[in-house]
Image (cartoon, rainbow, N blue to C red; front, side):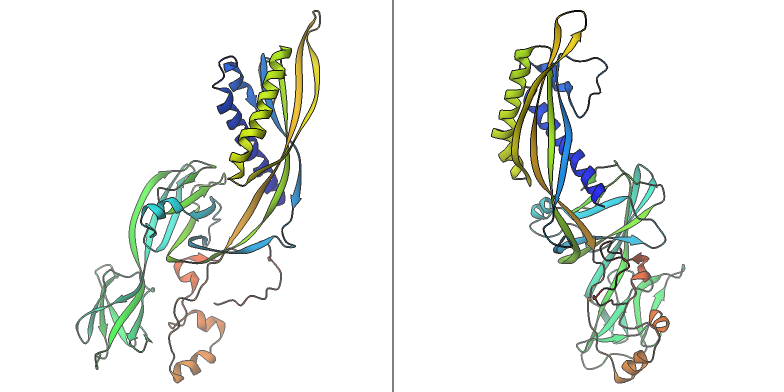
Length: 403
C-alpha cells in the first residue's frame, strides 16, 4: 500500500508542478518554445534549445500515529461492494460539497443504494434502489394500507404505531402482488387496527436507471449521481459492479488512516545559451518559492525547502566549441495522504420485542437468525457486502459485529 501511495503521490506532484510551470512560461514572449519542453523525463526526439525536466529525487514517510489512524469520517455517502463481484473500478467516493451548497445545504440525491455496473471498460450504468424511511402509511380503512411507492420484495419493514411493534409479513399482513408477482404497495392486515393506531413503513423501492455514462480511467465524475464524486481508477473491467449508499443525513461512513510524505523533486534546466539557462533557472526558482509556494499551501502541498545545485556543460558538437549548459535545483515538499475504509453497518431503528419473540430469538442459531423475518435485516439481502479493513485483516478485532 505504501508503494502505491508513494508512486501515485510523486506522479501527481510531478504533473502538478509541470502544469504550473507551463502556465507560467507560456506568457513569456522570448521562451514560447519552452512550454512543450517542460516534461517529466528526457523524451525528446531531438535535444531542444532549452527545457526543464522534473524528476522525483527521494521521499520519507512522516507518521502521525503508530497505526496511521486519523479518525472517523462522517458523510452522506459511502462505497460498498456487490456480492460475487470484484468491485475494483471505483477507487473512492466522496460527497460533493459544492453541489450540496448549491442545493441550499441539502443533499441533492435521494437516499438509497445506487448500483453501478460497467457495461464496457469505458462506460457504465446506474440503477437506483431508493430508501424510504418512516413513511406514514395511508389507511383507507382499518385493514388496508397504501404505500407511496411499490416496495422491493423482502425490504419492507412495517411498524404498528405508536408502540413501534414490528409486524411480520405472512402473519400480521400480506402484500398485494401484480401479474408478475411483484408487490404493488397495497397492504392487507390480518387484523384491523383499533384505538386510533397507525402504520409506518421502511422499505426500498426501485428507481430510475440511467446510462450509458462515459468512464474515463483515472478521472472523477460528479454529475451522474448529484452530490457524489465517483473516482474511477484504472482497474475497469467489463461486467464489474459496485454500490454507492446515500443517506439523508451525515453519519459515520469510514475509518480514515493517513499521514504525510516528505518528497524531493529535482529540476534540471538545460539550454544551448548560457544566459538563457541562467534566466530560466532564476525565474523558475523565484516563481516556485515566491509565488507558487503560498498558493499550493492552501491545497495541503507545503514547499519546505529549495536548494540550488551547480552548473555544468555538455558538448553539443564534438567537433566544434558548442555546448549545452545545464543547472539544477531541488524542492522539498510535504503533502498528506489518506485512505478511507468504509463502515457499511449501522443501527437504523430498534423495535421492541414481545416476551415470546425474545425467547424465540434467544434459542436460534446463527443460520436460523439469517432467515428470520424479524428486526434484523441482513446486509446480504440487498446483494451487498462489507469492505474488509486492510489494516486489521486477519487480526482479532475488539469491534462488535452486528449480523
